[in-house]
Image 1 (cartoon, helix red, strand yellow):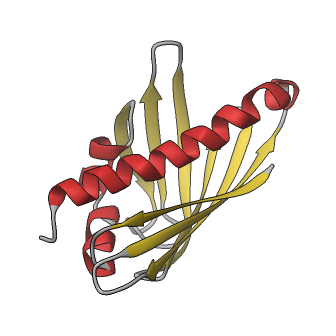
Image 2 (cartoon, rainbow, N blue to C red):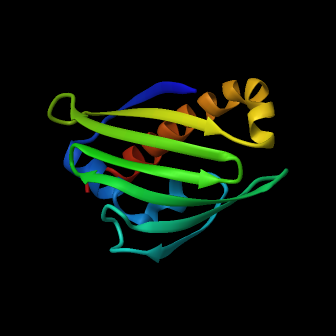
Length: 147
């Protein structure tokens, strides 16, 4: 399952990247994030692995992030692995005027095991959650101001 989401943020790209690239900010815009723990590699660099734990009313999800590309301010890519789900995430950041940044997020989800059976029922909600994540970051970033 492949799809693209995007959002325009009313801040300069340098400020957007400053906020995006700081792991201390993750809990401010990723709903349900309980913890972010570096596991291996050089933090923030390709090959680095981190464990993310999310909790919602219905479930707890643990995933491993592996950074595959760090070419900021232009791009940041990674994979996210949870039980039965492999997510390839490619993020691009474009200057869209002097004080506007467009974030384009390309997602590819691969399902295995029991999750493969659930795919038809959850793919719509996954796309909506992906857009919500971008929208939540925009609200967080714009609330922080130009710095």
